[in-house]
Image (cartoon, rainbow, N blue to C red):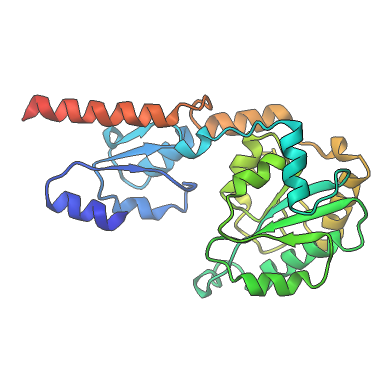
Length: 278
């Protein structure tokens, strides 16, 4: 997308970037904004982009088309989809948004920490009755490496990394994340959300500060959380729903399913404004 933005600038064509991933204090890539305008997720994203030196008149808060997705599903469709994955009707279903590690990440967090957290999650499900885990690898994750960690656990199912995780969130009961952007989707869908943060893991702080997720800090805590949920004690673990709503309101502008329409309107306004000055 950046290449197209550079070419557009060189050719004098107005362009608009639509924010796709999280934008926090670490989002230095916005310093190199080549598009004329940015459609931002929400107020906090806008502030993060402005803090990188971008002019306020270039950043417009619209919400994200990604979050226009509807998570409502009939009970029968939910049952059918779960059965299609091999999940029993009475099982508590968890979905893990797995992530990958690059050598460039090593200076921020020891890669062994991520492997340890994955093993802790998988171990929490081994021999756990009435619990199933669906593992959704990241689009650039090494699938065989992740599969090797699962071993032969019958209640852990790894799906293709090309799967749409939102379709899995739609039918699950609980969500697990190491800091994936999809955590936002799970919170929008109202799923009980678990974000392991073992010592030295720095990629979940954004959600830790939200007070809207469960945070195991060790393998023992991870196993205890899964066990409590499976035996019906999930309510005592549930985060403050007011905190969840407040977090979403700060990060996602107007969760009304109309972000795409707002961006379309913005584009038409930009075109109309340019015609005035032609």
